[in-house]
Amino acid sequence: QVQLVESGGGLVQAGGSLRLSCVASARTSTNWAMGWFRQAPGKEREFVATIRWNGGSIYYADTVKGRFVLSRDNAKNTIYLQMNDLKPDDTAVYYCAADRSPITSTLRVANSYDYWGQGTQVTVSS
Image (cartoon, rainbow, N blue to C red):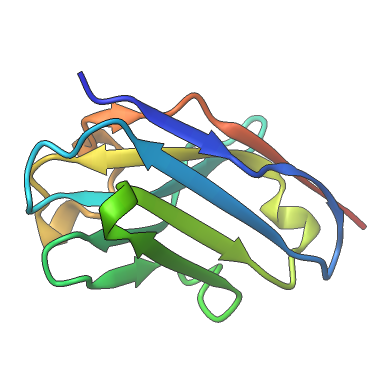
């Protein structure tokens, strides 16, 4: 069973930055995707960003494009989410997720991911 462990959340003022990390205990295939979703109170879980391990293609939600940067460390099975110019609307619990057999058309769909971390809270004050 793959375990995902997130870290790096916290409280920051609007305009500030945070970096999230997610470590996978194992990677079950060379062709998998690993990324981030978030869920604000009273809202559905939404896609933030993801990376396909094979080839390194990265996908972003329009709401974070240009402000958030996803990167990875292959050797450590780790991804990072650098979040810049944070806004109060970015406040949410951020979840790391991994998909064992990703399909491009469903990379932004939470239900297509097989493994999930416990989540880390990000709070942006105005």
